[in-house]
Image (cartoon, rainbow, N blue to C red; front, side, top):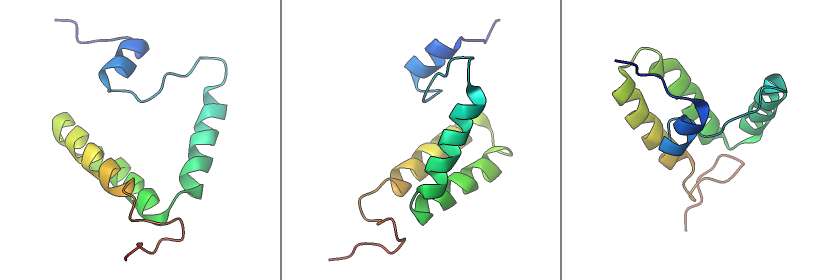
Length: 87
């Protein structure tokens, strides 16, 4: 059974967020890193946590946790300074 898929199919199914051309993968990685570093502290912390924990989790658990962390970190309640906006 062949379980491989190409990059475009991975993007279509949500397995990959973005497909990058082969010309400048390092430039794209740097742009992603700069965006991450400029992000709100909760989002940065969530991304680091997923990178660390996801390596040791079964695939389905890592995907589920990643989606949860994405939703939490991208919520409207966090401002770029890191303190939650509370009414």
